[in-house]
Length: 162
Image (tube, rainbow, N blue to C red; front, side):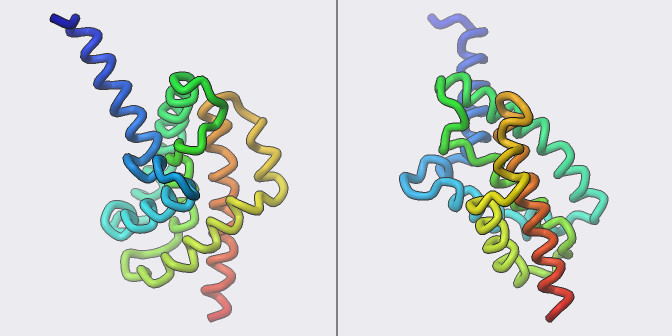
């Protein structure tokens, strides 16, 4: 019979990996980051945008250390630096982009998704440089947060012009 502590550790490791990969999103063969962002965009009207602004800010602030922990543990268990299957960082960056939206602004999720993907892929300064600023999961998360800030500014500019 297996040791209960081993079962608990295996269960926790499996949960941590599923959170880091957003379930099957990170396991997609092609463009797992895009799939992770899509999952974040789909979940936002149900889990993120209905919250008041202060609640969304709290979620984003808590998601950074939690996502960093999950991403760092996944990186260590896979013995691979910034594995492409880890997409919790896309959730964080996408939700930063969506931060100023209200629950009634669901049509703006589409341009927010496109802006975030653009900045996450293009990695303008200092997004690319930020990947090396912090170790482990913290470094995995930080560049997506900066890409999310760029995308949020582009989204706000777009909304102001429309």
